[in-house]
Length: 81
Image (cartoon, rainbow, N blue to C red; front, side, top):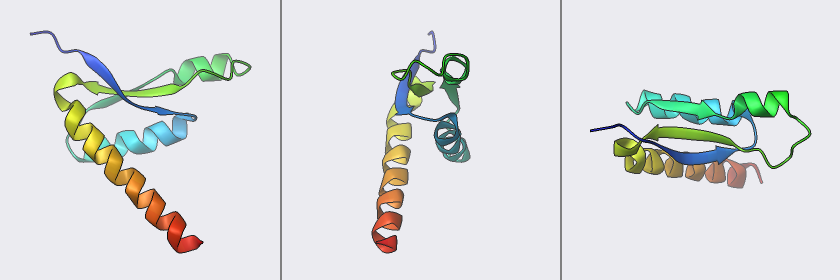
C-alpha cells in the first residue's frame, strides 16, 4: 500500500502552518509543510498558500485536531473582546 499525502489545511504564513504542525505531531500525527519556499522566493505572487499535509490515513484525526485549535482561537478572541 502506498502512503498518500493529503492537504488538511492552508495558511497565509509559514509560522501559522508550523504552529499547527507542532500540535498535530504532539498528538502523534506526522505532518509536512508545503509551499513555504515558494512564498519566500516569490513574495509578489499573492495567491500562494502554504499547505499542511498528512498521510491520508491520519487525515480525519488531523481535521479534528485542527478544528479544536480553531475553536480555541475563537474562544481566546471572544475573551479578549
